[in-house]
Amino acid sequence: MRVAITGSNGFIGQNLCNALKNNSHKIRQLVRYDQHNSIDSFSVGDISHNTDWSKALEDVDCIIHCAGLAHNLHRSKNLNLTSFEEINVLGTINLAEQASRLGVNRMVFLSSLKVNGDLTTTDRPFTEKSIPKPRGEYAQSKWDAEQKLREISSTSKLDVITVRPPLVYGPGVKANFLYLLKAVSLGLPLPLGSIDNRRSFISVDNLTDFLIACITKPEACGKTFLVSDDEDISTSYLIESMAKLMNKPSRLFYLPKKFMHLGGFLINKENMIRSLVDSLQVDISYTKKTLSWEPKYTLQESLKNTIDSLL
Image 1 (cartoon, rainbow, N blue to C red):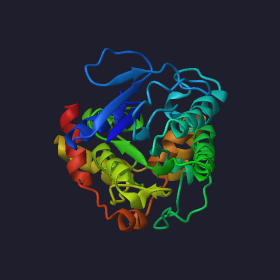
Image 2 (cartoon, helix red, strand yellow):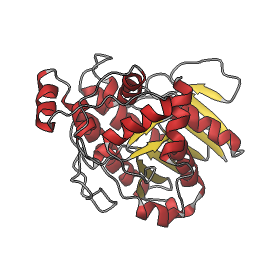
Image 3 (cartoon, rainbow, N blue to C red):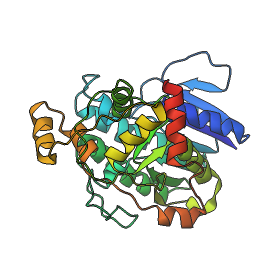
Image 4 (tube, one colour):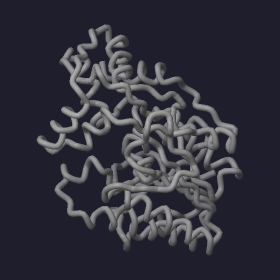
């Protein structure tokens, strides 16, 4: 099978390319700019409503669409809010429509658990039956793209599979997870000792393994899947696990949750604080049953790989 991967030079895309090589699939890397890779690759420029994918999709059987504007990159790149619609919605629609015309059989769309919402009450996780409640421009753009893809699939021969992962971590991870790793490695005191939330994560190795299952199993066609490591933990337990693997003390101290939310509001870091103190769980029972899939790596194994890479 020839598999085209958008965003192939990103965190998830790079790991996915390596995993597909090990599964003997032919890979076509779709990148913004030519990097003179020795493997099959195409430069497509910026993703938008008028990107020309025709040459890049020749003889392609399946697309895994990882590229997009991430919520944590929006402010750092000084992009306006319409960028989410242009890249994540219109760019995705354009890709799917051209793929359909060019005879591509299957498209796996990497969406986000944020489509469901950004918090859950403890032990009441999101499931495949949960009503989407996207919050913010990023989540809304992913939800809008999902609905448009469903329409395209219903009127063409392009099978679309949607995957909504929670926070993805692993060797090479960036953003908030990397900041937390560095804080623990430096032995910084963290005011999270009172936090008894529950959050789902997925290692990049488990995610890539699941994406490969989506391109090969007919049971996946037309479905939306929630995925995770299938181990929900508190933020305080996560920090303690990181510290133990680093042979560092976990310098946790107690600060009431309401004060943390107030601090996040005052310093304009509400989303970051919410990701540390609130719960965000996902139940993957349907996913495991439908595709006969289980996460290959435990959370502790994946954390160790991440920390070994960082150190």
